[in-house]
Image (tube, rainbow, N blue to C red):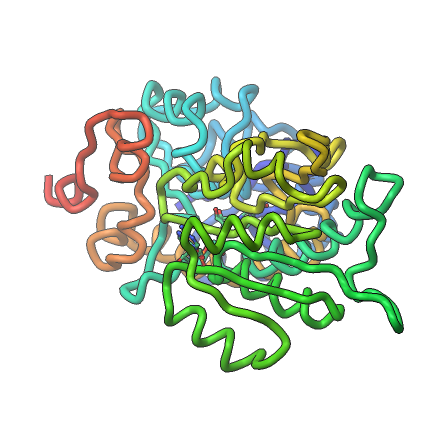
Length: 372
Ligand SMILES: NC(=O)c1ccc[n+]([C@@H]2O[C@H](COP(=O)([O-])OP(=O)(O)OC[C@H]3O[C@@H](n4cnc5c(N)ncnc54)[C@H](O)[C@@H]3O)[C@@H](O)[C@H]2O)c1
């Protein structure tokens, strides 16, 4: 198979979908990788390193998209990339379609076979291609949350770990999955007072067991959310219902009742966000203030640490990319149930139930598509 890797064009997106080691792995199985010149530079990966690994370097994104059977990317196609989408092309990338009707329509209109990293799901419910980026976003959420709390950014001017004789900040985390538990570890490690809420008691028990007395675990329900959020200096939104829009757990009314200058980092903004007042921001202008609360809602947080993120991402995506290339799309999905859950659109149809529900549109199960 010929695999294409264009340069990412989303604002401040410096990750790249395949490393030189990935090119070597594809080449070892007889595949070719076409890479846009400079695609790896943001992650510190030179064209020379890619060439040495056997990549075919091309000047423009158009050449990549037009000449390949599968495009591997990091972020969803941007509007200027829509004209490059075409029938039968396999697009393997983060999509987050439930929160993005425009991309969904473009993929359907152009009959792209789109497989979303974020909906590939193992039998135990875990999301192997979301996990590495969630871990990074979770760790970053405390870093950017601490920054948002600084006075010059409109925050309460409170240091997460406090000082001798002075209380630490209170961090409230909604969702104890991959990103929430990573935020929890860093927050507790920085000396903040942390409480974390989830609807899944197993997740809470795990965090309670590993971090013990440094934090409070609480069942996520309306009363607990309200009480915790109103008392918080920093709130981290890290909930997920796979493939669907994030549930709105914090209403505008509740934001209004938060402490003035408190900060909110809505990691789940890529699925629409779990706070009513959240709207997507970019790394160029990451924060805004609404109802006296500093909001940080960047949809591609790991992009600011591209060195770490590119390696963490490609460690997870490569084996699935190889399956698609080695077996072809239909065979690969037929043999791997987790990969089949990644199918979001095919030949003008929505293949993921959560995405279809988000737009009130019909869906065709991936199994049906594979069988037909
Ligand atoms: N903004 C970014 O740059 C960025 C980067 C990576 C991941 N994300 C997003 O972060 C979100 C979380 O991802 P994850 O990998 O941590 O997911 P995860 O599945 O590991 O964890 C989500 C948790 O939310 C919990 N949950 C669901 N409904 C809840 C509710 N009502 N109250 C409390 N908890 C609830 C689930 O039980 C689960 O434990 C996703 O939307 C993901 O796409 C964003």
